[in-house]
Length: 329
Ligand code: FO1
Image (cartoon, rainbow, N blue to C red; front, side, top):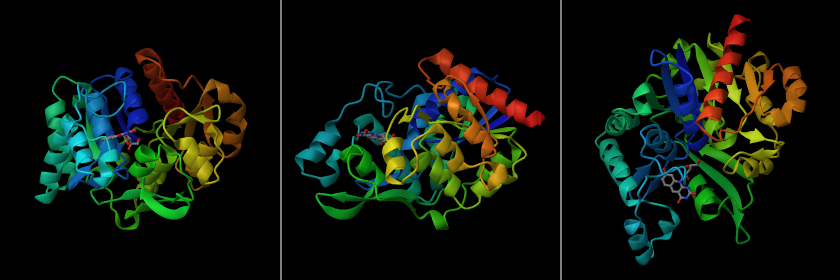
């Protein structure tokens, strides 16, 4: 079976681990990762979601933080602070720095983000879950999520990382744009993977800044709508709150109801100009199933909290079971 996962960082990575536990080594998993979180800092290209998937599956992740490296130190960051560098708010770890240096060198040499990602993954793959997936960026073109907000009373646009890390999502969201998205093309292999897939999964990643940008890359939404494979998603919202991160602030800022149904209908049913065939909501949101069914999405209520390996594996199995049910028609 070939499974394609359109993933953000933390939630997506956790789900992918469950997916690998719920399948066999004969099953192929292609991960198309969001790159709209990416940012130029200190002359380096930082790719948070690619790195979070790579470190998580490669066993290099700091599991407490959910991002960045284990046994990390912050000397470069504190030195930048001592120099009064304005972006010193960014958590640049000394070990993590090597990843950005290797990637940036390759980008400057014209190698492209796919080759850079392959090169970085080669270090982390041996004898880890990373060996069982192909990790692709959604595009090799530069796309960045920027937030229109108000800081100290004046309207301004800030990069998503500044919104999230410097302001802890505590400033108003007037709008969210993916700069560069119109000119972006899917990275090599992305459309082919979707066309070849037996199942496509939207894991519980942020619908606005993780899954949204992937769907917004010209060509990807249509590829999903034309895909022979069932497309199944997992709600990142449980009981009206984001499982993790700042999805609720973003949804509220955009005037989108903060619910598992609203996010499922935001992605939309394939029969209604959207991309979804199926959607999993938590058992706490079982009352929302009729709204999703009315919207053309086949929905099931199952436990969504990925509290440990067993529940994460079960969630992945539930997503595959819904896909199998949909494939039978
Ligand atoms: N998240 C934080 O909350 N604080 C940080 O300082 C921070 C630094 C950072 C550095 C590299 C990286 O790959 C991720 C980092 N993240 C940090 C997480 C990152 O903002 C998020 O993983 C995504 O961009 C949003 O899901």
